Length: 316
Ligand code: TA6
Image 1 (tube, rainbow, N blue to C red):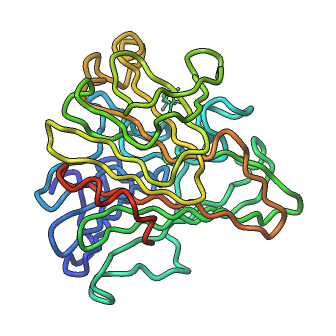
Image 2: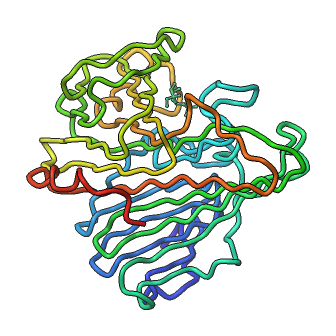
């Protein structure tokens, strides 16, 4: 097994392993063969595979796997800040910190209710973290894998502080695509967006599905709770359902920006697309004792019946 030291029986659908840097990861397996891998470094989902063992998330061949920086790929937790919208490092610190398994919630395995397997992680600020962001919080993350291989994430952020605090948030999701120039996004037509390539100026999207022929870095605001990414060549679509996350960030660095990123291959922009369920335009404010919940559910469905999936909300 080389880079993984197996330490739990696989029959339960849950396995706790260590990666080659000794970082704990939890592997979730569905009875039909789908899987997901969650790292305690950053609470990052580092892999999501369908029941044919095909990887659905993009990870750069140039990615750094050694903490502290987040690995370029998978699903990163951007908290308490998205992008440079505050005084902290880009996308906040949660994606660079070590999380713990949340003992308060016993992991659910498919033997119990046959429908899903999940793991719970928790992040609380250390003394050092409080120096750069002086707010006590509890960030509970539950990652599910349904028996059909759908991947769901529920984030619950509680203010355990003496005073209110505000934050922005994103599930920074690197989707693996066959060819970016053949991919289209449905569900964001005619929406307003803030363009990060022109000082967050506000524009309105045209009426058709979004396609890609150059760098895109936009925050679509007040978006519907279901969006689809159609990949004709792979004959599948990603259906993204969300709750408590009004915005959708769409990012592809294209050629020029790709060459500036050390942990990203020059041509890799052709095989990835970030579509992030997010809360960016308006910060979320929590009074002491209050809790916010943000849910995202990812399904990979065959293209032919993508539209059937577009009309029902998050089912977790
Ligand atoms: O999600 C879009 C974005 O904010 C882009 O502006 C780009 O910088 C990307 O995130 C990647 O950020 P990272 O800090 O992971 O390099």
